[in-house]
Length: 193
Image (cartoon, rainbow, N blue to C red):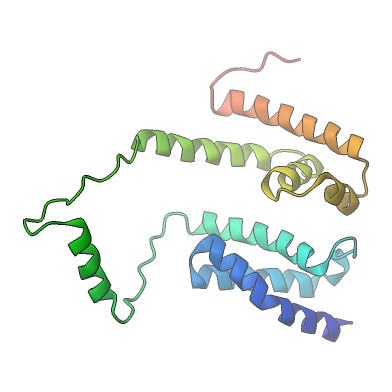
């Protein structure tokens, strides 16, 4: 079975790489995430219970590996090598944007409030921390529904639960997230017993 699994993984690797490249916009990070995903699959083939397609299972693992890569490299800036003709394209773009005196041909669109963007990034970091402390099963259900955007039937089939149980778990997860955010983001102490 391991040779069959290795062959299946090799067949799915290009699809996983396309997905990872879209998420990271960095070839090395995408390669690392896909390699780690395939290692998990090869080291723990018994984890795949066959309740979903192999590709769905792998993408679930890959999404977690991508989040790990993005966290790991969140402060790095990538500088790519210049491609052939890039200098010409840059000159064309500059000619479209700037007049002969170096001024804008048209004023740029307002970019918004940088403080709000930073606040949003900080909020997302706190939300992520709150999701991390959810009980494992609640966190998994929440991520499957809200982050992976899986349908109710697919989640229920994957976890072997009823739709009623799913909605109760999602409700509990959201309540715990709200409580966590009230404390860690809004600075309010919990009034619930």
